[in-house]
Image (cartoon, rainbow over the protein chains, first blue to last red):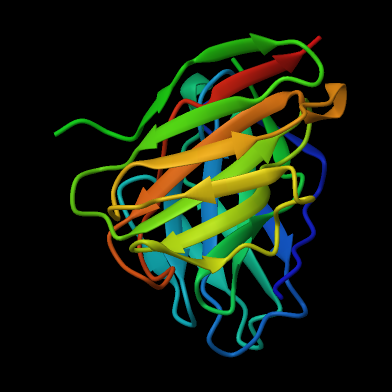
Length: 109
Length: 115
């Protein structure tokens, strides 16, 4: 299964870009890489996902390494509302997702 | 329509009692997932349903835990002989497809406290 490793915490200043790294060296060729975030007292919220190519949506960008052993979630301009725990997950047997401990992002005004 | 709904939002039970936690997924979603989350940790996978069947129940910690989805929509997570270590937030998620090449929607969770 696709085990993931992320830094425990990161800090960013408001209005600056944030790059959240994730290592998934055991990922298989058909496992998708997903990112979710979780605000206090809420369920996780989808951010973005991809397989091989870089992906962009209204929330963020996902840069996937060519060997797929790592990826980076990019928040182009962090806001205070982006403060959350960010989870990088790999799919397991291409069906369900397994979460690690995530990265707690603090955004300073 | 509504998102994923979980009831109750909070449940306090005594050690040794039986509890049921309910999940109403988004209408039409075929895939349904149960996770549990302890304080300061990420969600821990429990079980995944595709339609009515449990496609992967490898995350259920022991035989006190059981989940059903008899009509392919609502799911119930059942815990027998609850223990204090079962205290956690139980999260349910649903998605429109069998694979994970899609977005999963999570409910707000049920906070279970075993005293």
